[in-house]
Image (cartoon, rainbow, N blue to C red; front, top):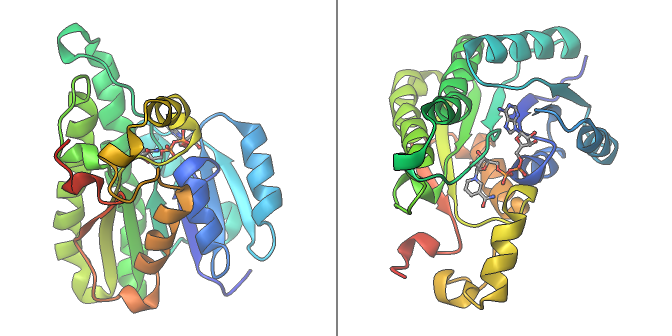
Length: 250
Ligand SMILES: NC(=O)c1ccc[n+]([C@@H]2O[C@H](COP(=O)([O-])OP(=O)(O)OC[C@H]3O[C@@H](n4cnc5c(N)ncnc54)[C@H](O)[C@@H]3O)[C@@H](O)[C@H]2O)c1
């Protein structure tokens, strides 16, 4: 047992989730979820194993039962209930709605929205009783902007933002905050091709006011603040972390 707070980070062994894990490792023990990539999990565990107590959990999360299983495993294998939840797991795949297979949309809604709600449902009771909890969902600037092929993803992320506000309202009086962050373009394994394309066409300066693609730790730094004691008065917010991209009209 350890007296450091335990943070459950889904998608915590890659990309943005790993950036969040790096930022929280100084003050938290870490339960890191991932879908299939065991090798990345082993690397993350080796990297973050000191100073944090780290354990990785391979569970593909698509619905309530998967979320329940992950939370039960984390509680029994780490001997504590997480007081911090960061839901980062999920994929983005563009596909024109007119030509799409509807099951893919259900899958997207499952991993981004249903799993966010299910994890919160499994954990928020303990946070409420403990009078402390921090929940952060990773949304996207895509929740408020449109692009061809992005309708299903935007629907899932917009759902996450609505849920953030609703849940925040119910638990604010017990020291539990619920927020979302909305990244712009962040360099991760998921965006490798897109980032290469944007950089090769010289579109970075035109589309991102900060003049660079984001790093996972740009998101991690904001999440670290939202998970801190100092952020006690910030709840129900959706905070962009996008180098100003959502301000830009081009
Ligand atoms: N990279 C970006 O530019 C960007 C921008 C906005 C929002 N996001 C969001 O950030 C989150 C993380 O994206 P990333 O770019 O770091 O991706 P990534 O592919 O680098 O990492 C995703 C992680 O989630 C895990 N994962 C994916 N689907 C899962 C599932 N169904 N169950 C369990 N684990 C699953 C993967 O194993 C991996 O560890 C996603 O929700 C994505 O929509 C990313």
